[in-house]
Image (tube, rainbow, N blue to C red; front, side):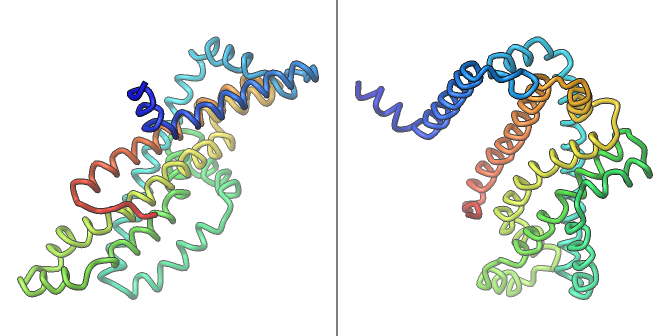
Length: 260
């Protein structure tokens, strides 16, 4: 009995989260059946789950294509943002010149950019990667710039006393100290990259989960729409928690705490 209580106490948050989800789905199922809602308006959870199983041979390859677009976009956007933030650190004038343009790019709605990217780069992989990179670029830039400057003055003085070069200070002090900020921005960027890839696919694509959404909407197949949304959510959550797990392992080794 005590072991069971300890188990419940240790896993109370996942258990509560799962319980809320089950109660929500049961309530949804009951209300849709009681009110006799048309499947074209709101299908039942059981019908959606059945469609997920029946259409997995369509949904799984589609989410695989979108996953590649998201991951490549996240790597590209985050890599450019980190390189630019390091440049800001050593060339302050560059920050004053480039930062307003980064803000301007962030201020433009992604829906307005996606048709241009399709027009310029076609409806293949490259345009989707660019869109995913653009949408996750700004949060990584802001957090990386902040993190690289949030270092202990005592540690910096120690490195300077030991005649460490700027490169050594960057590699051995600034980058490790900025890890909490980098991972915080990467987790945000991971979810945004999914949004960017989907928006780009909706603007023009012949494969990917966004293409499945577009076809399902044209065919008024609401059940398939919900099924595609489930696959998108599962991928987004999986990517977020993979980064969270990597963050925990690296920050534990560096003896740092994540940014709240």
